[in-house]
Amino acid sequence: MEVIKDINILLEELVSSPKSDSIKTPQDKLPKKQSDTDYSGPSGGLRLLIDVGFFKDSKSLPEVIDRLHQEGFKYPLAPIAVALLRLVRKRVLVRLPSKNQNGKKIWVYVERK
Image 1: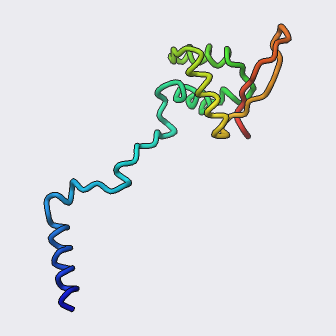
Image 2: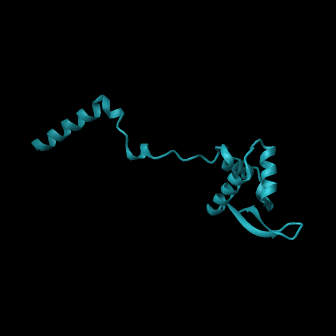
Image 3: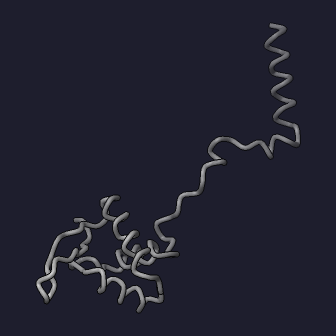
C-alpha cells in the first residue's frame, strides 16, 4: 500500500509540473498529414481538378497541364507527371493507354469509379 501511495504522489507531481505541457508524445512528432482540401503544389492542383469533376472523362497529360495553367497552377511537366502517377498509385485515378492523333501511344487519366 505504501508503494501505491508513493506512485500516486509522484504521478500528481508529474501532472502538475510546468514541464508536463512541453512533453511531446510520439503522435506530436509525426508530420502533419496534408488534408484533402489543401490545394497547394502540383498534387493540390490535381486534387482541385478531381473535386470539380475534370477527370470524369479521360484526359491526356497536355490537357491536364493546360487546365492547371488555367486554374493558376504554373508547374513544369515533370512535377505534374509525378503527382499524377502518385494519384494512380493511391488508386484515386486510373491510367489507361491510348493513341493521339498521330497514332503515338500516350497515357490518359480518368477518375476511378
